[in-house]
Length: 320
Image (tube, rainbow, N blue to C red; front, side, top):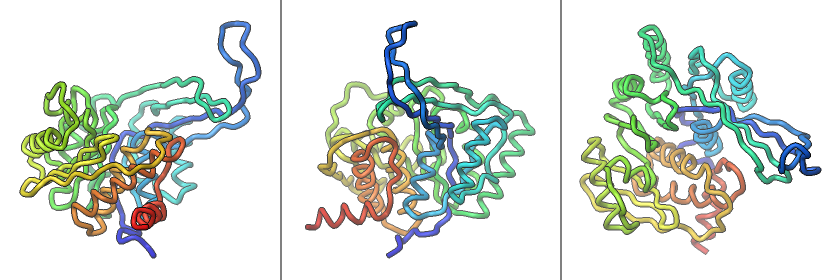
């Protein structure tokens, strides 16, 4: 049985990196420094940061449309090839004439032993670039009523691009997965999915206990600050809280699964929340499914793309 959001088009506007992996085995200790020598036998590239949210939208059964800056360099070309291999279009991606941000991980026997990043935040946009991006977004808006904004702090999400989105999707649905950094501000979004740390940062809150009452207070501050109808705050081992402007807070406990890897869980939650809302689910239903998606994500090694089948299996296990 297909999900209610099956085949729904979802725009994903976010910072996307080229995540490079070099898999191999440690053969000896280097005579140049006290570090292992890794003999690499496999290399692969996949979309990271907002690209992980993109792939979760796809694995859940919706049709994601990516709008992200990709350079005309080897990492950018590799990401375009990856999208093509997975049946995804790159026609809404923007060549911002800068190198593509890359994160390279060295693994031995599936264990990460080193990582190096080459970061290239989006530079200040010229008037011509702003017009080109606005044209892309207008074309994207014609395809879908729903957009997921994923901010990883590389300046693709900035006051200029966000103003374009809030204008074009004013009568649609804008879901925002924010980031805690000094330039972070998200006026005009309809719903936000911060974690506890991000919520505290955006409300200038310090030394707060992770209790239902305190989290509800945070959520109401965010709703007032950004004029939103509701917010979903993830709380690690304490689960998740849905706070509605004109309603009660709903606190959802975490599900007792073995925690293997927490990286990428926020992307899975944001993707699930977005597709469920786009599929016509209620706020509470969407939050409950997002909570399940987070539990599934952390129970798998590496960055896992949650499937609707995973959600159904966990629902059955809970009901048994």
